[in-house]
Figure 1 (tube, one colour):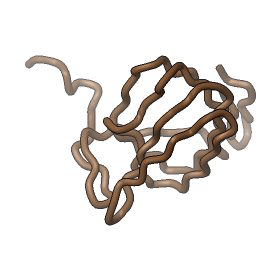
Figure 2: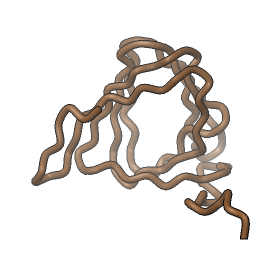
Figure 3: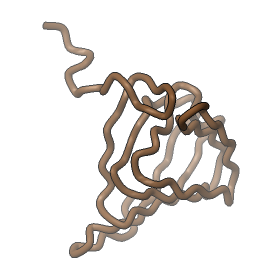
Figure 4: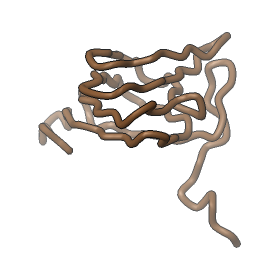
Length: 117
């Protein structure tokens, strides 16, 4: 649910609700992203050079992530339903990936990845 969308800068603030057990592929954004856990618990992986860092977020938990950092993936997800308040200084873009190693996202996921020829 969007709370604010600035028509000139495209900055936005919004809520994201994720259900228990939901999984997402690795994702990368070309801009800074910030998030606060309003309720629930979430485990989030960030794929960094040399190692993957996994953090647990509870209500009041916060992240500020620079652009280009792969995050999410199979080690991430809500332990119960979670509500995030998120912000970006411009409209958020996302590219999904199937793998991540050494700080690099690999194997882009396309919209037609699951289709049969």
